[in-house]
Length: 111
Length: 113
Image 1 (spheres, helix red, strand yellow):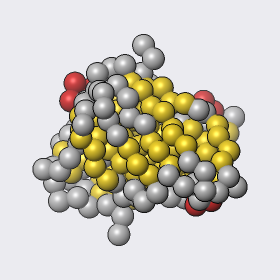
Image 2 (cartoon, one colour):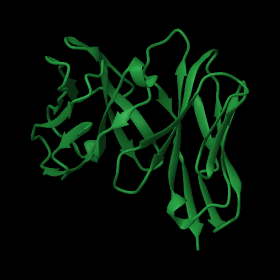
Image 3 (spheres, rainbow over the protein chains, first blue to last red):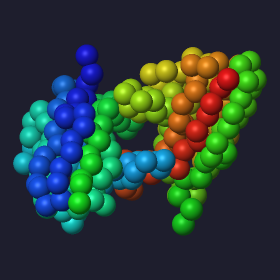
Image 4 (cartoon, rainbow over the protein chains, first blue to last red):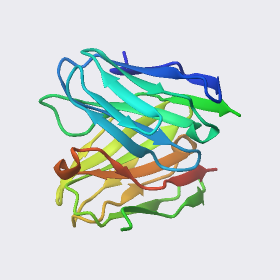
């Protein structure tokens, strides 16, 4: 069973159509949850770190939120340049600082 | 501000050949890691290091060796390449100063024929 599950696997939106990506995790204690963006042919790029339930972080059209068992990446009025794969990763409390990654959500925003 | 530098960007190997993927970081980060990324499988950890002279295995270590003689460098060696090692390889580093969020290299696309 995967410790980190992302859904949906793929998402197609029209420009301006807001939506959310989900990351659920099963670690017993969370040290930190990370969101990354990955463009085709490139390495992932760090977006946010969340530490505790109720925490929110924002960057341009993206807002990440955290509950006790999942995180959401909300995309408001997306543009075609937001098209990318979004990766979620968690660090378990008491473990190493090496995170476990989900398989990602591929987002395509059509103009 | 180079960050994490990986070389080469592309490589084709024949089955049984060996090679070393290079990774260097200039941020004085404690942790360095190697991942492979395959379609539908996400990022899988191969080996990681928590400091110079210290390495450990990740989820998929078989067929790969690492060493960390300096803080800056973390090469990944393929001992005898197999077609199953065809993948995109990413090196990453992290540190408590950036709350352990990774900085990734741009990747090496390896094909084993």
